[in-house]
Image (cartoon, rainbow, N blue to C red; front, side):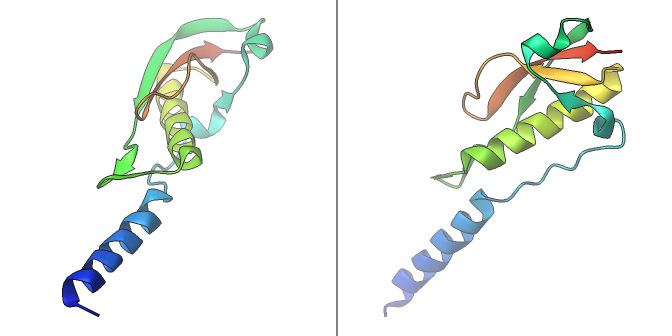
Length: 107
């Protein structure tokens, strides 16, 4: 097998493996923040908003949507914890590795 073909195969394999990985860790502040739906925050006080951004591609290979979503939620949980919130609600869909969340303080 030619050397360039083998190198290309290794590059594609590595990119594929990395595309499913998540790199975001939930901070101690973020551990107390829950992802809820709009109907679940009726008795909560809105604190503000945050927008999470993560890489949606590794090289040219799209990352798995579940990995991207998990990272976006974890980033939003971390930020909400710093803002004094304990709940977040997604405010729209993921677009190119970016999503907006509303931060709430719930009883």
